[in-house]
Amino acid sequence: EVRLLESGGGLVQPGGSLRLSCAASGFTFSSYVMNWVRQAPGKGLEWVSGIGGSGDNTYYTDSVKGRFTVSRDNSKNTLYLQMNSLRAEDTAVFFCAKGFRYQLSNVFDIWGLGTMVTVSS
Amino acid sequence: QSALTQPRSVSGSPGQSVTISCAGTSSDVGFYTYVSWYQHHPGKAPKLMIYDVTKRPSGVPDRFSGSKSGNTASLTISGLQAEDEADYYCCSYGNNYRVVFGGGTKVTV
Image (tube, chains in turn green, brown):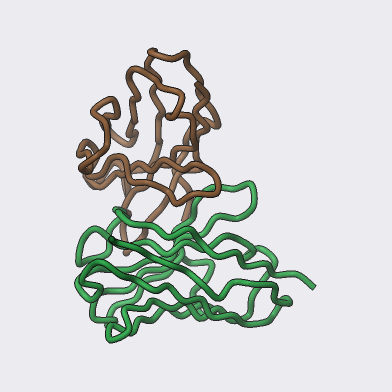
C-alpha cells in the first residue's frame, strides 16, 4: 500500500524552528519529486516546497525562501522540511505529497494526512 | 505568487451538474497544459481528481471532467452525488518553477 506519514508538528514560538518528517512506503521513493503543501486554518492549499528525486534540485514558494529547507534521505524513504525563523503566518497543517513525475509538476497523486504546526507565543 | 481565482462556493441538487472555474494568467493556466484538480474533505488527505487539464486518474468516476479555454480552466461534476460535497482546488504549474493553487471552492449538494 502506498502511504505517506507526516510527523514533527507542534507548538513553537515565533522565531523558533521545527523539523517535519514524512515517511514514505509502497513506491520507489527516489524516483519521484516530493513536495510539502500547507493549509492555514480556514484557508486554501498552498504549495510550499518540492525536491527532485536525487535531492539535487529544490524549489520553494517565495514566502519561505531563506527560512525553510527541504531535504530527503532516499536510504530511509523519508522527506524532511527544516523550518527556521517561523512566523505566525506559518501556522498550518503541512501535508506531504508525492509528485506524479520525476520533475517538478503540479500533479500530486498521493498525500499524507498532515501534521499541524502552530506558531504562537 | 498569486493564487488562481475560484468561486468561493457552488451548489447543486443530486443528479445535477456543476462547473467550477479557475482563472489564472498567461504565465500559468494559459501557458501550460498542466492544470490539476483536487477534492478535499476536511480532516482527510486531498485527492487528485484531474491532471493535465483533462486526464482522470484510475478510480476517479467519469462524472468528473476538466477543460481549459485561454487562461481559465474548469472542472465539471455531472450527476452530482452526496459524497461529492467537499472543497475543490485547482492547481497549475507556472513559470520559474512555480506551483500555484486556487483559493478553493466549496461544493454543496
